[in-house]
Image (cartoon, rainbow, N blue to C red; front, side):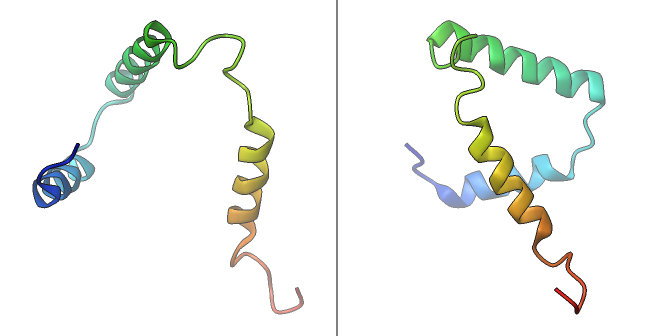
Length: 71
């Protein structure tokens, strides 16, 4: 539970300004993925569940504002 949203927002802004090297970002991602697997939130059977919906949403978002005047 978030008890101080102002502090969380400040932390998020500070983290957004930091430049993290690719290898460090990858290590963080892998650690989070491994934790999710250990907790049972993700497994090889359900990893791609719902990806078709995610792809359709991403396509719709990417098309917003990309049409010319003729759309």
